[in-house]
Amino acid sequence: MTMFPKAKASNVETYEVRYRPGDSEANAILRAALLKEGKGRCYLCRTRVTFAGSEIDHIVPWSISAANLEPIKKKYLPPAQAERFGLHRAHNLAPICTTCNSTKSDGTFEDVEALAVWLKRAHDRQAAVEKSVMDLRSEFGLMKSMSKLLAVDFSSASVQECLLTLGPTLIDRFRSEAPAVLEGLSAYVYRGEYSDHGCLDQRTFADGPLIRPIVLDEGSRRAKVALEEVFRWDFDELLDIAFGAVECAIRDDQADQLRGALEEGSSAELGSVEGLMIITVNEVRIEERIVVVRGSYESDGSAEIAIVDYQNDSGTSGGQREVQSRGDFEVPLWEEQARPEAGDVDLY
Ligand SMILES: [Zn+2]
Image 1 (cartoon, rainbow, N blue to C red):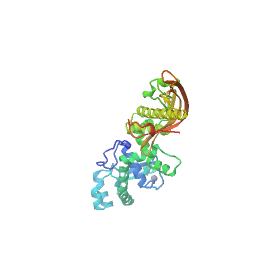
Image 2: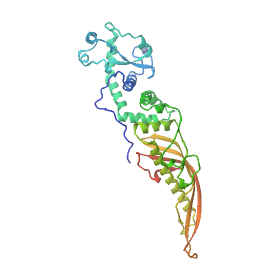
Image 3: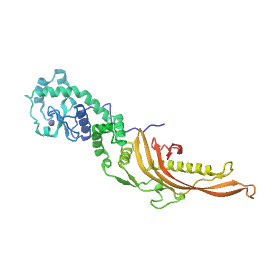
Image 4: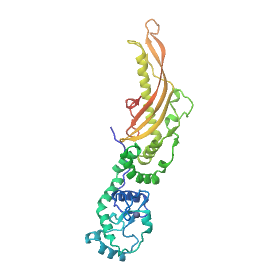
């Protein structure tokens, strides 16, 4: 089985973790990491802060002049650390609440003894902060947090915890890269091959199955955005594949039912099953590295039967058998354009 397609990876190996002026996405991830390693507290007043209520603070202000920086490094840092010191590196960054940030002065700090303590704490956390940023940036981290975010059971404590730590960062990424994810419930106009015959009118099999306009719920909408924006799937095509598989599964099931209803030992042969079919998609989810499409169906099936009849000149006599079926379906998709077999579809 082919696994889920890979998210577009950023240059993970060569990435240097630091504050990047003007790069709000990079800074949002850095802020989440600083907040996580800083135990969710403002480093100055120690009050709890949320992601939204926090900012990144440069412990030694980044506006400081080189001439003023040198004596500070000498006074507050061990020589080895002073040598590697960078104003935008994690050893000079800490999460700060908005209140403290607005009152903190960008002064020279020459007489602030606490500076040694703050810098030491930041230094001690540097490795963890950098690892946390790399995890969030990596394909694995993105996959992990994305699948958690998309397939969430909001009542679960571990999901809530995950959303609290990763959600804000991802939402910031979505906001900049795929704003559609933050819109409300939306009707999606499907334009795949099954929609060629229009919607809302009752159709016969010859016209193809009828697809109603699809209303995407919260989870499906997020899945759609992720599939399109992150994995570059064509959503209409994905639904086509699902519809095709569901249709085959329903017809197979109807053929089985019709065959089962024929008299035992009968030599009757069953023709292809045709008739009205209505397939409605209710959810699209990304779960455990596969895409799952769920919905309901309603279908009339009828088939010609041919019975071998030696009394008849032509050798056969015919008839028609009908069946109605309705229920729900679930179809898993592993990769774009890989057609699932009818047997992969669950009808229930
Ligand atoms: Zn504060």
